[in-house]
Image 1: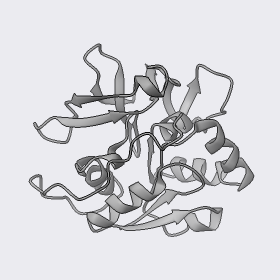
Image 2 (image 1 turned 120 degrees about the vertical axis):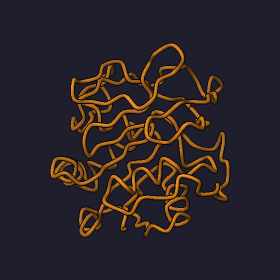
Image 3 (image 1 turned 45 degrees about the vertical axis):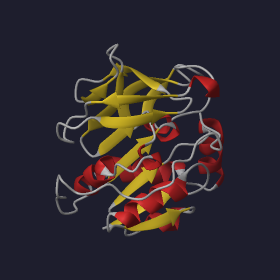
Length: 212
């Protein structure tokens, strides 16, 4: 499987590391031509306004939206989730509007309000998933065709899927648990993974990411 990771800003290197650890080929995407031949694309976390502007600068907005509309698997994490949304509560950035969800940026406060939470995530088995939220957004509206995969204890959705599109408010690339990356590779047409696959070795990066 050839999975692209948008590499104009944010924590793309961590996503590439996880993908390679589970046997997928990870390609860094910086220009529209880098999207050719991909089975799927990850839009990583970062600073959403900067990410949006760089996507415009490098003429990536329309090709990425076309990829999502064509049925190719696209996954947005944190800032990437903001970019996929149909609408956000702020005027900036302008999202791609390919996924029928509404999103609020910085829903939990400042960097110091970042937190971790064990989640039950549909499709990942019975073991809880330890999620890392860093200046995270949250989903405030879900379209009728959107499947909520996981929510916080207060009921707010933080992981959703709409057909070929996946979005998470947290950072799976910062944990040793690769189940969501495996789930996405399967979405992109890859082989099913062993549910008992071991944890991977990956750095837990905190505090250095300029998150949305």
